Image (cartoon, rainbow, N blue to C red; front, side, top):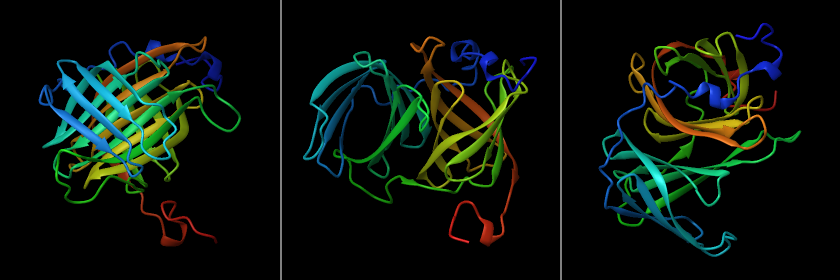
Length: 277
């Protein structure tokens, strides 16, 4: 811990956090190798994804009103099994190094959620990493159940997350926009901050939790299974820049955790349901 934790200029850059942070990462899944999934959104934009051994080949065909030009590339890719028929794929665009994609494929519901992480410059109004969210139907599969949706279901929870024998953090989910983290063990021990977050519900008890830090120019996308409060499990990625502004890190990780406490606010002051008072 820095001698003065309030002096954020002494906080470690992202690359110094990476060693050992992936100790609890799950084994890679090869279930999707050789399979193709075409994601179609409400604009008619179509993105085909064909998975190989450690790769994904994608073909982007924009729909009406989508200004993104068509393109097709192959990127290195890691795939993790989250739950039965629920997969998380993570890849970093080689041709656009300031972009990374987190793709969540629910083969049971026939829906997908894509999170595009974009690294830019921090301004007075926004942090360096921004997250863009897109829901699509999977063309090759029948739809059932509900598509992914934004949620405030984590608000009020305090959770312990252990990433390795060295790294441990607690999260306090304050509101639909904010959460607080505190490092309990590891290189950042004693540091804490409150940062932006966004949460989507993939399945009952399984959430895509993202955060965007303001001190270190980085962001994270995770998928967290909260169904067993004594045995939480998450899989995710950290993506950010080095001290000079260049891209320093894009690495996946995992964590085991448990619920520490649950705050229940009086209805009139519930931050998950703000209203004029």
